[in-house]
Length: 210
Length: 304
Image (cartoon, rainbow over all chains, first blue to last red; front, side, top):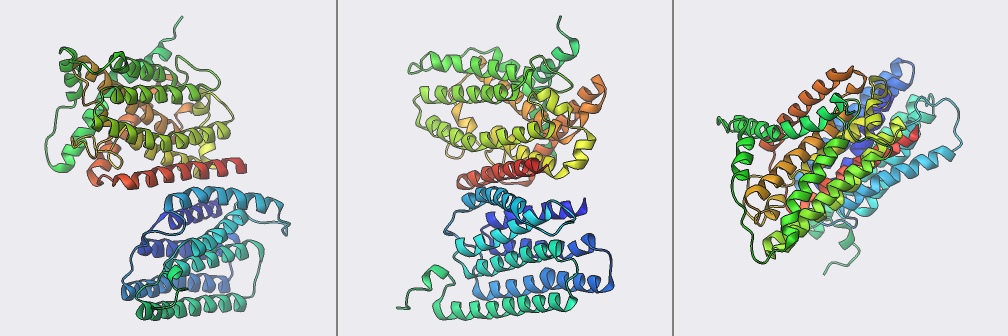
């Protein structure tokens, strides 16, 4: 029941991320997604102390640290909206449900180890993954690429929670550290790109500076 | 022999529908700190208009004169289909298709009557109306298809009476998505605020209101009345998705539905007081999101 509600929240946050042109709103919604996912292992697995530590760390990092870093970058860059992405927002919104249907189809043919707590977990995790990819390829502003990367990571995380029953804490912490360093470095890189080129449009990065 | 409980439902729609506008106006007045019109103002307006004569432009043809009558007739038939309680006067397998297409017929006549006047403003309004309803109608159909799928029944009365608390417990997410889509469709189809502002009489931004600029007297009364009944019907759809009244006994379900419909008018009033109209370019985006919500609900419904 609770897992299902989190999965629906995940789907809806994905849709919002697909449909919004405001970068700050997107940062918030991805943070919300991260927090709701951080609570997921507490619901699907039997309680254990290291699980609790991990959930708290995860929630703090995705719900507080990442948004703070990204909003600070946003302020420095002074870019608040993406006006014309490669794929229009309305079209992205309509693409969402079809991608969900596709991931449902894929998950129905995926050989999985038995006993997954909810039938929605795998399809929605795949959906989140695809939405992350979609955000990366269909938006021009570099900040959306970072957000797409975070959504992608959320999808992988949800998949991991569903499939791997008890990953060692160390590996999970390692992944979290990787993501943290990734976002940190990307924030700095974006700042330098915008200082050098006066924009962060990835489609214009391939042309030489005149 | 016509059942009293069946005939009561279209009668309730026809009697109480103008009240919805009164409630919306009162709520908006409350938010603005005014006292507002009397609750029955739309009835007075209708009465006043019915007692006047109609003026017809010489450029119009019979289409313009037929349109208000067709609109009202179509919407009254729909009022006989969409059930408040257990079963309405007209109920058969697949009746929701008839209901949606009758609403489509109503819109079609409004649009060709607007084009018939030859006014460029009305043509603009007609074009917008058609563009937005083109996006809203699939969402409505998909939402109804989700209901049909969940309750495995093709008639509205049966589908709605199968929306029980048990169904809500097991398909809460799906039904909520459908309800959210229906809210957006209700606001768009009835030209309420995020899509169209019924109060502005500025032709460049209007959609619905601009199409009826040339109608006067009884014709205009018919169109207003039809619009009120349409709002009533969409509210009933929303209420029947949201509330599992089907499991209540006879008259209780009807009374609860009517109260809930009036509450929806309050909700519309609150939305209108708190929100600004969207830019016209943004409206398709809103309607796309309604369609996306409905399709999501469909995917969830097919899961199990």
